[in-house]
Length: 148
Image (cartoon, rainbow, N blue to C red):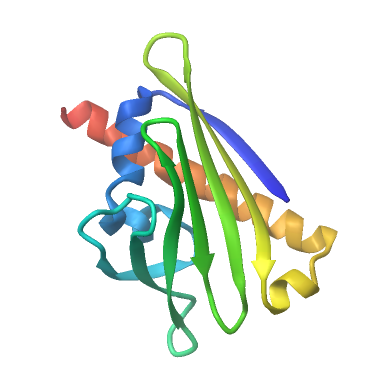
């Protein structure tokens, strides 16, 4: 499992607001290039976000489903990318001091070929991808904090 964390200079509620806005997913999740639709009750358990990942013309359309939601502290998603497989992604938000949030992403392949070929190289790639994902999430949350 790849686990990455970053302290973001915004309160948990502000970071959560980005996670809770499914339409921003392609702005901060590395590899997601387009959000096609978001269920009205996102991020409630069972809701889905429909996305496209990867470069055109080989991009794949799939959806991600919320498995657990504890605003503003935890979001668990099953991210689909079939036929490659799917991953379970856990976002944990923890207040730090006054006005900052430690965000942790844990991600592991859960099904499909990606699970079968899991290696240290895959973990390293996920680790680097999720470091950039957290940088982007931070930029959006901080920008929204400044706009508020």
